[in-house]
Image (cartoon, rainbow, N blue to C red):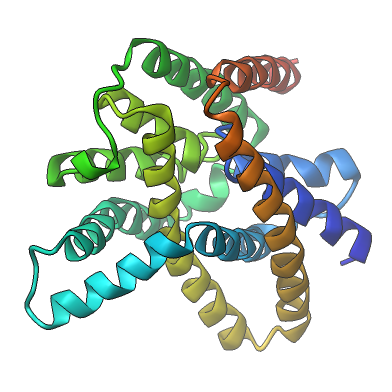
Length: 267
């Protein structure tokens, strides 16, 4: 794959991963716009793994808490705040793992990579995000995260396996509907991405090794490195903007793009 296309792929992923506009949807649309062959799920996951590094670096203190929590759990200390964070993140990841396996085994994960699906999900979930952001209270903060809320947000995250939905958008929608403040809900959504993307990366590595596809492995490594840099910059900017900007601009973008894609799909 040309380096220029890999660079563009990484930039698109890095910029859109943390915005509620669906990075996966944009990655699927790119080949048609650029006149390239579909890069496939493997490279999509690779650039997602690059953004994983950005999340870990940006939220390094919380990631350290997750590791401490894991050690607490091993020692039987389940009620420490760090252990609770780790447990809730693990529980929130279960729905997306189950749904992901189902989609992979049934072949639906590839069948849904279409402009029609992305158009509808862009439009529908954009409107749902607007509703949740405008009607959701802001009385909850990160410390209020509970088992019930982790399960609900995990189910929202599982929906994001449908292209165009947006993983961050879906989990932020769930958080706002549950009454979390924008910054706290977004932070939880970002932390939830860590085990989810990590699981996808493990599956990708297994597929590449099984196929002995070293050309794909090289492209995946380059894409991951480039998306890491782009994602770190985008994440820093977004978290700062949350203090003064609502999710409405992203909703407007989603609705416009969704309408355009549906017009193309049904024309």
